Image (cartoon, rainbow, N blue to C red; front, top):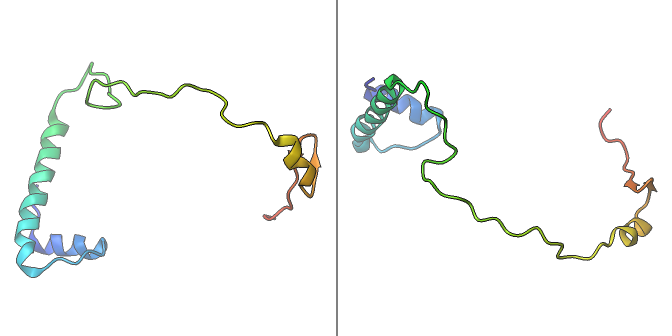
Amino acid sequence: MSLSESEVVACAHLARLGIEQQNIASYAKDLSGMLELMTQMGDVNTDGIEPMAHPMDQVQRLRTDVVTETDNREKFQMIAPQVEAGLYLVPKVIE
């Protein structure tokens, strides 16, 4: 799919982007190339291919789940305006 210069200007207007006149042709060429790549990718047969969360085969390091703060719940609930059954009561704000 090829974008015309007027289509690029219309897209820029909708996205509230300012494009200088001398760059419009370059943007049209680049965007058309991206759309062509997406078309090619859509034509690839992906039957039997499992979706990936990330293209790199990496494992995310996770921190250990350790308690780092003391439990101040009782202290905070003692100074709260309204508490019932261990829950904070707040005024209704939506009818």
